[in-house]
Amino acid sequence: MATPVLDKVEADSAASPYITATFRIRRFNPEVSDAAVWEDFTVEIDPKERVLDALHKIKWELDGTLTFRRSCAHGICGSDAMRINGRNRLACKTLIKDLSPEKPITVEPIKGLTVLKDLIVDMEPFFQAYRDVMPFLVTEGNEPTRERLQSAEDRERFDDTTKCILCAACTSSCPVFWNDGQYFGPAAIVNAHRFIFDSRDEAGEQRLEILNDKDGVWRCRTTFNCTDACPRGIEVTKAIAEVKKALITRRY
Image 1: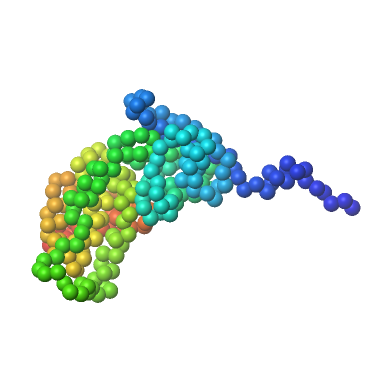
Image 2 (image 1 turned 180 degrees about the horizontal axis):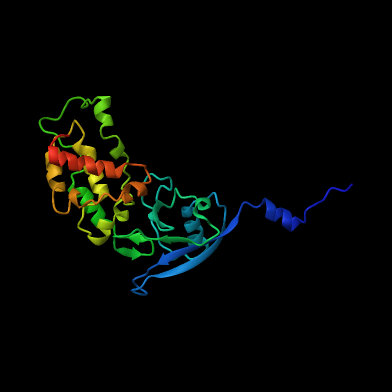
């Protein structure tokens, strides 16, 4: 009995790992129009690839004017945070197969910051808030002749908030930040927490007073959007609550 043989086209199709996916991208070019528009791009791509790979394919093969930030492409630099299917994510960590690719995948800039072009926003207000909370170790006295020792228990106290990569996913997911750009935002508070609870630091009181401002930690409404958005799994809402408690008790 003869063995059935698939038609070559059918065989190639069955063996192909690629799917056809549509990416609906929010485009904005201030040199062309004051209004943003949605534009669809259809690409053949392996669903196990990432949204960043799809954006590269679109830029390199379909429309070289598409503009977005990216650097390391491994979830470390935090530069490619964007809203994908309505949620803040890193494009380099988001697999296409996890996004229901049978439907259009929406990609737009993060909210609460001025859009400069396409998926790029002005990050300066975000980084200014970060700088304002003094995100560095402050000590007094003479420079030590050896490293400043710290117990494992003391290090564990702020271990979670050392993971921040300044992607702005948490801050730009916060409804308070959307409505009032003066709010420090979750990322700045997380980075203040990292030093407030560091046993080697001596500027905890200064940082607490900075965050005691009307635009500081008390603006948080505990919606947990920030915790849900963090690509590093930081318990952002918990860190904010600990800073609030430290302000009330002055114990940290």
